[in-house]
Length: 116
Length: 112
Image (tube, each protein chain N blue to C red):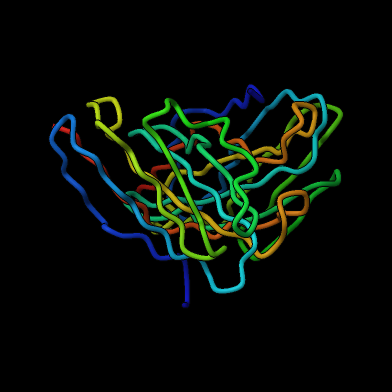
């Protein structure tokens, strides 16, 4: 595709519900990052994939957060038993290079999650 | 973290020049990025610096001093559409990770 695509654009969940956020990176991009961005803050790292391998998940805030990229392209970020503090914009970014030589990240428009 | 520090907000006049500073602390510096983010939109790449000096791209320039842990983004001939958040991000290999870490961003307001 022309750019990184994320869906849904907006998601409203009741506290305790599970949600799944999808990211379609640019075709052929090796690296895929998930970031969480609270209002008025910079993006905070969640997890990183190089192809299908999840090489870094140090930023995932709890075991309620789970991410996968089974075929090395589309990725899904799943949040179980959502809490109000999970409300944020979830950004996906991809890069042509592997993690040790990333020079440019291409971001999607994000999924704005609101937990009521 | 990388202790990335940027001013929270800046204002400037259309047609003027503005400099947005970013300071950081790392143990294994490996690159600094600048991104622009309009409200409700994706961050878009502006520049990447890994060596000291100034890099110019049209109206935007980015400067890096590794010894001082300092960078700035210079915007010339400001336009109203430049009103956005400007994010500084650093890659620090000292922590064993290649992941770019972002500062909180500087909200730039350009007024007529």
